[in-house]
Length: 129
Image 1 (tube, rainbow, N blue to C red):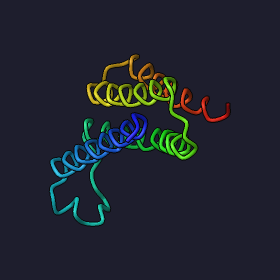
Image 2: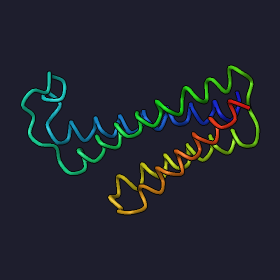
Image 3: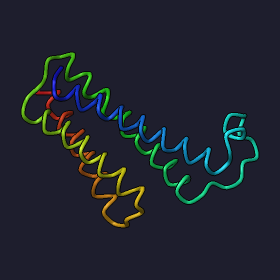
């Protein structure tokens, strides 16, 4: 498996961890019965539960950009130092982003987002030439 595909699998694994954390906070906040039902009329989530919910949405949005670009690069046989570094930057920055987001640290979260986006764009730049 290429480094780029490995970083994609690791990123999917990171999303799974985020989903599990979100679900855990949902159960802790609302109880298992409420979370197992249709979740109509739930109280406002706790700060941490709301934060991990936003983190989940953000991770999904970023994977929707990253995954097809990595898969197209793989399908057309493009793998080089730029695509490898781009994939590594994406995963490392998304991991940092998750930690920063959950900790609630201001100002550096957008920097982690920007590094991940730069990694995606690095891979995309290699698809056309």
